[in-house]
Amino acid sequence: MSIIAYGNDKGAATVRIDPTIRQKRIFIGLLCIALLLFALVIRLLYVQLVASRSLTDHKVDLVANSVLQREGGMILDSGRGDFYDRNGYPLTGNPLKVLVVFPVEKDFRGNREQIASLSNILHIHSEEWERFVAQLDIPKIWTGPSADIGASSRSPRLPVQLTEPQMAQIESLHLPNLRIAEYKQRYTGNQLARHVIGFIGQNPDRITQQFVDQFHKGELQLTSKIGGAGLEKTLEPWLQGIGPTSISLFTDAQKRPLDGLASRMVSPNNEYYPVKAFTTLNADIQQRIETMMDKLHIKEGSVVVLDAANADVVAMASRPQFDPQQIDLTTGDWANRALKATIPGSIFKTVVAAAALEEKAASPDEVFDCEGALGKYGFTCWKKDGHGLITFREAFAESCNIVFGKLMERLNGEQLEQYARKLGLDARVGWSGTFAGQSGIQQWDAEEGGQIFAQNTPKNDQGVLMQSAIGQRDVRVTPLQAANMVVTLLNKGEVKSPRIVESLRFQNGRLMDNFALHTLASRSNGISAETAGRLLEWMNDVVDHGTATALQQAKWHLAGKSGTGQVTTGPGETDNQWFIGYGPVEQPKYAVAVVAENVPLGAGNKSLSLFKEVMNVLADQ
Image (cartoon, rainbow, N blue to C red; front, top):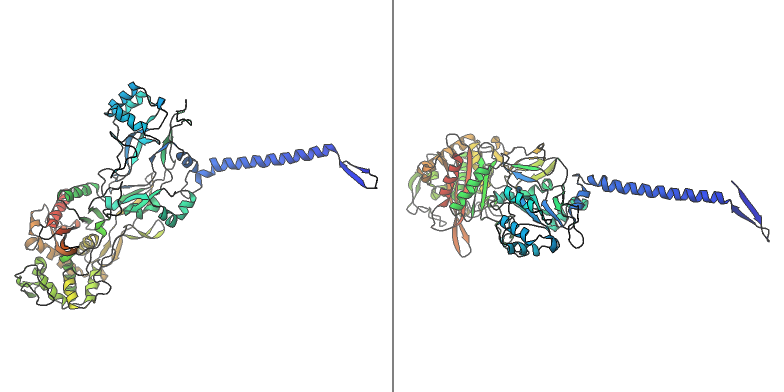
């Protein structure tokens, strides 16, 4: 290295570096800066084009998702997992061929001749189409004549499904603001099992409280729709998709379609998501039962059909009905009444009978005297003149209040609670457990456990026990519990846990995991097989010569127990009309509970008619 030193007036030396060395240093410095910038560019390209496609646990493609959010795009499929019945019939996610209309500058909406042709294809007036397009500020799906953009209505208009000829004719017009695409409609106008499936909606508070990780990773936005009730809510962690499918039209700042650029479809590329949730429901049975409920004008109530062998839910319907696309949270119509505890009336006598038999408080042939009133506590029989001399077994068939009141004089409150639990009452029975490595999973949303006594009620007060014996006062039972109690009897005292979902599968059909069958109480911890068998015989008596002889006209030989729970609602009283049972008697396939709630006093018995028609539907399968 060459260094030149010069002296100055004061004897100091000045050092100067050779110019060639300085140039080399500058070159090396610039080269290092260039290499650093190059490395930074490579890193940014990697993040944007490679790493961003797998930055989340679900392998969410952030590049694709950023494109999906471009202004002017139309979401065709949210990417959320769908529900299916036990045979693979889709319950959500109905695919429709629809017309997507983009907001473009007026000169690109078509000439008079094209608009006239389009109007003829859609069977509308040209003025209706022009009014629809003129009000567009974001892409919209054609929803039919007189669609008023921005107008509020009780239920949103549903997309119009195009026919094959319509699609071909529209394509031939070559209008730049129109695209035909497949749209996935989550709920249909005649949506099945609405209360079971539930609904989705925006809930920013829940997202920030329960789904913090997904929110921070960008998998959920504050505006994302998540499960609000039913299976949509309980299976939310698995139903969340990995990104939507959208269609976009390239336009300039004046909303003029760009020459040479067609519309662009963007969709996540993943063979595993969204998942498929296979329920235990039978769609055909579900449809026919819901139709029957409406035909019989069941305004409030529910039907539960369980597989007699394993307690899987075959059908579950609730009324009043609700629109999952337009939820009014204030009405409560969306709540599943099959999971809500209500006054059971005389179907609860099944528990009292089991307790009396197991504790040997009475023999089946013991004779009692019913004079129509007990003579204390104001306790009376539904038959004002009384049943006269009647055996324990006959009292079950005739639903004699007096006999069951006298039986409770021989039992206590603790025993009543004990046998209620042995039959699957007084606790939630729906499936819960570990799934896909996660513990504490519950299939049923907002299932109630019911009760026998209220918290501060004296369990051994005789007046309390009298009313409890006939399913009144504090006693509350859900229709799901009631149907499951029948399954318990059919399985000789073993209490099972009803499932509504059998498994989750990936999009390619590969199994994610099964919801294993659960038993809540083994036969050794339940009532005896002898008592279970006897109660099933007594249910046969109810139809043969008891309170439900009308069921002899059904297609199957049926058995069961009737019940009427008196409910105080506001200024007056109404009845909960129940019937629980099974069929066919010779080889039971199904256990069923039906309840018509808040029926006016003195009205005809709807529960018997509903139970018979439900069983006829099952007999036709």
